[in-house]
Length: 108
Length: 118
Image 1 (tube, rainbow over the protein chains, first blue to last red):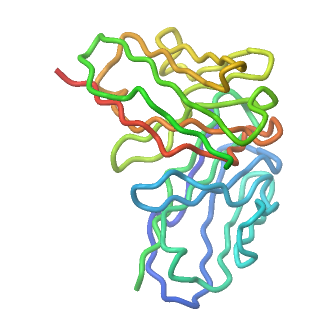
Image 2: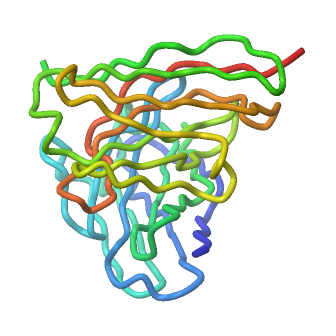
């Protein structure tokens, strides 16, 4: 199975900061990488698919990049509603689908 | 409104069975692959099963042989039959819609809690 490793596992940031989260795959997954946001007590929400395509309705301050084994999720200017946990997920080798361990973005 | 609503969770003893349901509305259910994803309290996401539009099914090794995913398009419903349940199966179970066969989930339900305990 392909292992997905996210870093950092948590970070503290202020409103307006630029935030970058990294996801690394244990082998090349081309661009079969997706990102989700989850707020406490809520279901995950899709943000970005195929490494860099923004899901409809997601603010443009979110962006994704990368291919092969290394990927990033960037929030260009952190907003209060962006404090949440973010997960990456690969769909290159399925089944199984595998997720990263998550990155919790907290208020500084 | 486009939505997924899970039901059927609860408390079950180890070795027991439970059947989860997911009611879909606001979209053409039969046209989408569907999945179940679970999350133990305070933990990350774990994919549990998938079913294609043609009824093909997929599972990770952790639940293969114990869980069965199915769908009933006439009722816009997805199901997960869970047998031989273990404490490690305790989690919130989410129903999720697959976006165009990408194995990317563009729509999620609110989840239903399954607790396996004596």
